[in-house]
Image (cartoon, rainbow, N blue to C red):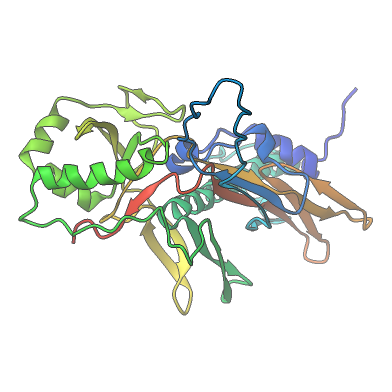
Length: 366
């Protein structure tokens, strides 16, 4: 006995999305994993972060009362996450047309084409959502917070901003550097990177990765001392946080090697991947690097985490349904125009695990 399946049901499409191959994204995968407790059945998510703990236990006189450890340096905030949404039309006419790559004399039915198109549309939307999350994660690391343009429609936007530090006290995640030039020696380079690592280690936070932009890479490779160290090594980074000597799974991201900078062994990683987004006035597609070509940053894997709030749906009967997950698909039907619109929604928020677990330097080179 056959079973009728509604391929445009929200839960069926959610199952299709779960079956998609994950889109590899460097900043999100390496620095912002999503744990079981990071998906909320609520409109807001809790952002908790604390200082690194480097206090020692005191010596005490025998019989004296122990000194109580105060719960200091801990903050908890509730934030409404960003909202990401995009749709794709599916019309009756499209179901009559031969699909891309489909045999000319194909006997595919409209139902079979619909199922194939829904799967392809969800995969296309997922790639776009992953790029948006990659952008969000990179911005949180670069700015210790983010400033985004929320679209009211295709031509109008508004600004939303969130800082993970007190502006009155300054940004502990920013490092001011004297720009490197022809007079800069490798010893100067090591001293700058050492100071950035010290800013983390002094707060008992790990310094594992040195992420650099393309122009910083070119400057470093022009130095014979650095190039000799790099020539001894090769490899790539993988999503699990380790290093494997195989081809990179991240487009535009390369691993130069593990280099010792005045005692700190750092994975030197070059980020040169770009995204296309609407910007400017009037809005127009613009290609931009996730990580600026003239910048560098010291941090460690899993320095942050990516959380998600729920999505509220209303079905055709007007009933409210609250759905949790990284992605939530929906459907809008326009019977008059014989059109069905597949909608994918998400409410992500990238946040640090500790106060300023990354140190970012802008304008390292010209």
